[in-house]
Image (cartoon, rainbow, N blue to C red; front, side):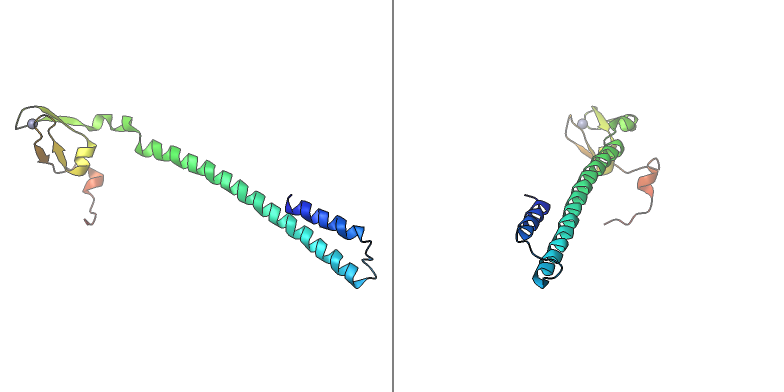
Amino acid sequence: MTISEKVAYLKGLAEGLDLDTVKSKEGKLISVMIGILEELAMSVEDLEENALNLGEEIDVLSDDLADVESEIFDDDDEYDDDWFEVQCPNCGADIVVDEDALAEGEVECSACGTRYAMELTEDDEEEAETEPED
Ligand SMILES: [Zn+2]
């Protein structure tokens, strides 16, 4: 039973008492109380409905945001041109330098395991901007 249904049931009980809601103070009191309960029930149910709708809208926004995030962060195609190969001075194998390696500032030769530190060049304008290093 919803709150409204319970209030309607209560109202039916009160009406069954055949209270005089005009001349009887008790009858008037009960009538006013039931009127207030009806309004409260409608308000609460409106709020519940609004909360449900908000929850659904938040779900939609959340999905949209996930789409945006995947566009921005997971679009690997964007970076296909951003890797290059260098030759390992130790063993001569090709080492793939991708943006992960650039971000770490280090690259590891998959053939001999030698690690090389790398410095970012002026090509990385975003990285080159002055940011305080922690
Ligand atoms: Zn090597």
